[in-house]
Amino acid sequence: MSSEDLQAEGYARRLIADGYVRTSRRYRHLAKLPPGMTGKQALSLHDREAARRFDDEEAAGYYLRVFAPTVTIDEAVFRAFCKLGGRVAR
Image (cartoon, rainbow, N blue to C red):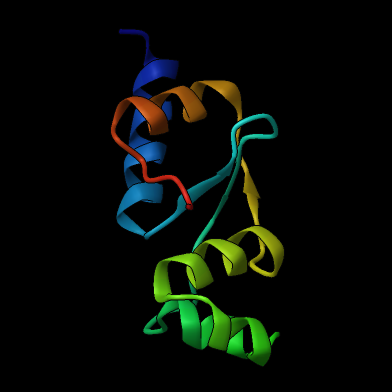
């Protein structure tokens, strides 16, 4: 494994540990919920009606895709993120 691969894997491990989930495969975007908040709580900050309609997992996915700030990662880190079992927003 090259040093670049090791660096990418280390960064991917930190992203996973920090709670980032994949929101876009095509654009290699990751996002995370605000600290200490559920999906419904985070979504209710932006769209109370949607937060009432969705269950927590759906609310989290919607919040992560629409409102959460995203991080764009390079291909090597993205491959490592997926290989290490990084979660996908539903």
